[in-house]
Image (tube, rainbow, N blue to C red):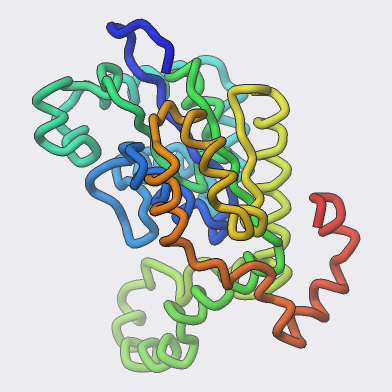
Length: 291
């Protein structure tokens, strides 16, 4: 990578809808040398940036499944600058250890002094990206996207795994006397939007539109990866993505990284009658995004 040896390395910011392959692609790039954080959640999202993204969305009145309110923060110059200054300050605090780990923290003390290819993935980046570009104006962006019906089904499956209406009802009956004195602090089930195919699919549309706007504006500083094509030709895509991320990977290393990929998940909806019928019912909306 051609750059001033004393210049900080700008990050690679991975955007794209939840359940679209962002974890898979980032994991493969990490195996080729892209540093993407030490402390991460089960979805391989760096806690440090995930919490900052959640904070940005929440103070705007939104969250990951209702991200549109972030536009009010981004559209307010004073608050946007204040938020950026706050995050820049956080970059210089010991809290950054959760991303850098102690070895890198002791070596550079700040994200702005990292001297190796690095970045992070979080679907929330899709909507908070303008603020991250305020902080890292030369950052590169990778948009990863997948068929909307597969995304909606994956979200619905995850929702069903963590939310049980029958269990919520039983807990309500058990605690009903308590609620006579104190109201319930939270809801019965989280992430209601993604409990249905339509809810998850419409959210996919929002993320797709937002991500495509970023890609168009960024030009050569952005790369797009279609999940299904990546599974079909991982080596070809990695040969393009590695230098894009500033990674010096050999063909042998790329081949080894590609061998880790499960290629069986492309267009999974086709094997299910319900999902195929839903795909047919939204075919015009899918066509708007090239599916």
